[in-house]
Amino acid sequence: MVQDPVQRATHWVRAEHDVVIGGRDVHKAEWLATRLGGNAKPASLRAAAEFGQVVLAALPFGAGASVAGELRAVLVGKVLIDCSNPVGPGFLLLTQSGLSAAQQLAAVAPGTPVVKAFNLCHEDVWRMSPPILSGRPLAVPVCGDDETALSLGGVVWILPGSRALAPRLAALSSVARAPPWRPPPPCDARHQTPLGSAARRRPLDSA
Image (cartoon, rainbow, N blue to C red):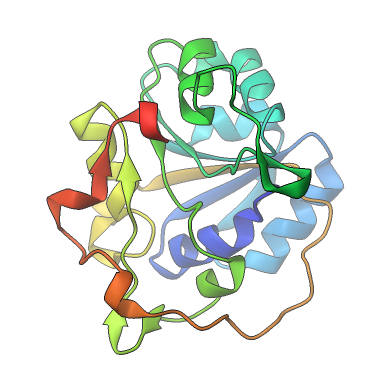
């Protein structure tokens, strides 16, 4: 499934981060950056990866590992967020080879800590401002093996106070156009993990 980076990056722009949208198609990147507004700017995939301290790989499963492999030299030392859902037609899991989607990114980009996040909610939930469900803030589970990367990947998505931690953010995109807006689906907040809970962190082999 392809993730639309605009829904995640919107919160980054609202928090006054500097955001670069990278794409192979410059016109597409320009369209996405214009849609975001604020401090968002378009760039090539490589330029976006060079700019960002935290890089969101908003790419379909399969393409993500290919792009991360191409950019591995410029990704070293940065935090790479994988938001893909490796699910094919009929909701069949595409990671039956044994490595999770996040592990595949980590394998092709050594020296780059990978965090799994932002893949569990429908894109309409990310359009909510703020994302409050049944009176409770949306919880964002994050998975990874690097504590520093987990801290950055877990907080930059919405908290204004996180700007000092990672002022430069990038999203690598292959999205041609955004889907039409629909009202967010019902969600029972009782099943959400509270923010800050240790239970929200899991290792990459389960992501």
